[in-house]
Structures are given as structure tokens and as C-alpha cells.
Image: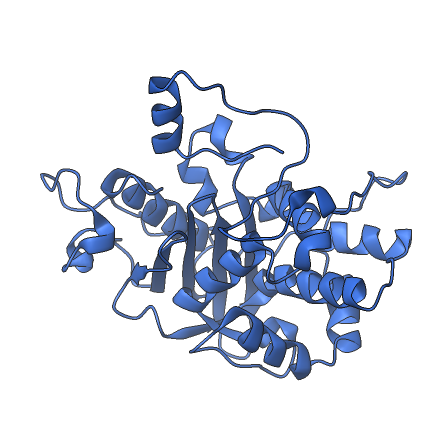
Length: 312
């Protein structure tokens, strides 16, 4: 088992003369979760997974994301009464963020942390979790083909497997289970997996449910979190880019990005799972701005949170 370390834990471990564990697969679990020794394993498929198509960028016209006001110093953001002054971004985009302390379950965030945005590919983490948990509960072992589909859906954000799983899982029925299993309060199903509406605080709850083993179950949690750590290519942006390169591969993520022609907006969303925390940043803005602006906002929010609390 490899335990993930935040900067704070790493410093404490160094002071105590402990040695950080390193190695292959790991179990990222909340307090009181099932024994990781029961986790299933999955070998790399013999055929390299195909990458998903990159979203088509509109004319790049991103507004710069700025750090918060200078002179604030370190603040315990989990107890702050004025979060709006601690996390700021210069943008005309709609954006929302939330941060969860996984030990206490407390969530803080922007004033609109309860407002929802269409998820796009971010919901794929739940589709994988729901399928794997239900398969294990039914005593079924997914085929190599299905596992390869899940891998490409998470690592490369392939859309085909998401549509297949969404249909097999009962469409809105899987979102009903999402709300029940993860204890969501703001979110609801859309007319498809991509249009599921999630809030930033509910996204933090989903990430925690995945990390604690509640979402995917004891058999497949280690596998799923490992795949989320291995997100690559176009989908690797946003929150974890605010961390040093050596730490990024230890943070599990699932991002979503899509151009909504009906609303003439980009929906760009980020979910991140650490050992002690979860974080979400949701954005939407006109198609005339490059889709990468959403990732820039998320990275700025995460960078500011890292400077304001030792939790992250």
C-alpha cells in the first residue's frame, strides 16, 4: 500500500524520522474503509488505449487568472469567515469552487458553491464507480474488453464507453444512485451523462466517496483511483497543475470540457482527490474564449488554496 502524502504530512513524517512509502498500486481510502488487501487488480491491456479527440478550441482569448490580494499571509481557510477575499480570479466567466476536509467532512467554497454546472466528462468517474461496484456486488468479473473501455474512458476521456455504461446503468437511474450513495444535495440528472448537473460542493462529495471506497466498493476502489491518477493528454489540466510535478501523479483527477452549441458556452470542470482533501472548480464561459481558460481558472484557485491552508 502506498500512502499519499500532502506537503504537511511529508514535513511531519520527516520530522519524526519516518520513511514515506513508495511503490506501485495504492489504496486511497477515507477513515473506516474496507481492507485494501481485498482490492482487485488489473493488468495493462495488451493493446495501447486510443486517445480521445481533443476539443476544438475557439479563438484563444483567455483572461488571466490572478492570485488573491497580497498581504493576507497564511490563513486557515477551513475556518475563514471571508473566503471571497482569499480566493479571487480576474475573469468574466462564471466559476465556482469548493474544498473538503476529508477527516471532518467540512466543505468550504465560493458563495455559489451550491450552484450547478453541466458536468461533461467529469461524470465518467462516477459511471466507472457505479458499474464496478454493482458488478462486484453481483459477483461478476468484468471482461478484458470492458476494463479496457473503462480505462480509456478515465485516462483518455473516451466518450463511447461513457455512453454505453450510461445506458446499461439505467441512464437517470445511475444519477439517482449517485445522489443517494454520495449524499448529494444540489445535483440532478440531465437528458444524458454529459448534461448531468453537479455543484462544486457535491463534486467534492463524489470525490470523497470514490476515495473512501463508498462509490466503487472495496474490490475496485484502488483500481479506479489509480486510473484517475493516470489521466493523461488533453484531460490533464486544472487543479493538479498547481502542484509540483513530483506531486501531480499522486493526485487523482477527472476533468470535463465540452462546447455547448445550444448555449454558446464552454463547460469546463475539474475534480481532484487527495489523501486528506477533495477539490472542485466548475466554470462556463462563451465559446469565443479558448476552452483552456477553464483550466487556467481551476489552476489559479488551487494555487491560492495551497497558499492559504496546510490541508492541501
